[in-house]
Length: 122
Length: 286
Image (tube, rainbow over all chains, first blue to last red; front, side, top):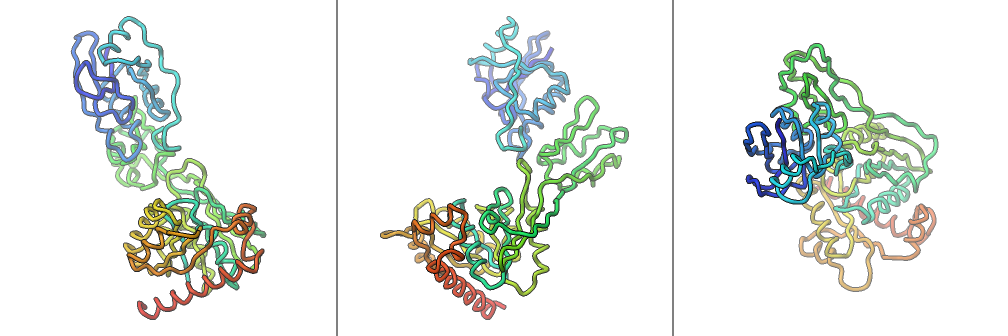
């Protein structure tokens, strides 16, 4: 199972990025092999629709689980269509969140915000 | 003759000046291009209304023909397309109607469909023909509405048109001033006002439009916008005082020119100055 987390830096102690669509990197953690990799988020510099593109990127990387502090409407539509499950992160590092998830301590992310532009990246 | 009224921010007096100039002129056209929040019609209260819906073309997908090649997904700069579980998804409200996806689809799996983004309204208020562009909330760009608005108003040949522009200096403003013969920049007497004046000043220079400034909300003492005009050698067309009478008329959606002899004189004089400037420009730069 592959878990994705938006992170500010390329290490396990990095903070979870507050933005899903425009996070600089995604941490991809494979729960079977325990391997971690960091992928550049090419959606970060998009003119618009960054959330859609970032979500597409996770779909293409065959992500099963997304741990994120929040998610916009359009990105959520892509993520849900791809059957990726979303959980809400807790304050702390990427490692803290992976451990919390493994222990079943992260709640399902249900609150989807309406975007920041009145249109576009909802 | 087309006269555009601009400012770098909202609330400087674009609508005040354009509505009153249009009312001071004997016969005129008023064009509200501030399609995100048009308010000129609140003053004119136009009658004999005629409306037309404005639509843009967005892609419609024929799923059976889509091969999943993703040419469209990769092309779209606004990320309005996603390909999930063998299905192409279009985010209508993110689409900017460039048509690129339809053009490049190797399977011809997409064609155009209409999406209504707003309307234009035409009406009459005294001697003024009032055109208003109204965009639906949340749409990406008002440019198609402004284009149609300006195009329709071309029928009124020989009549002076006043274009009430959107605030700022972005695409919608560029579209609004494209055919203007003259630009009036409205400025507030503050440092912030100078910053915003500079934005539209740079824009009209870039477009090589003749221009002049109206100083609004003038009070006693230092006026940074006036100093800016002096430094840059910008023609000051007129000064509107920071005045309770004008403020009260305006906040009650009254047109000052139609209510007050004093302001009728102020705007008639401004109109004459602007007309003289336009004629001078036409003579110097035909």
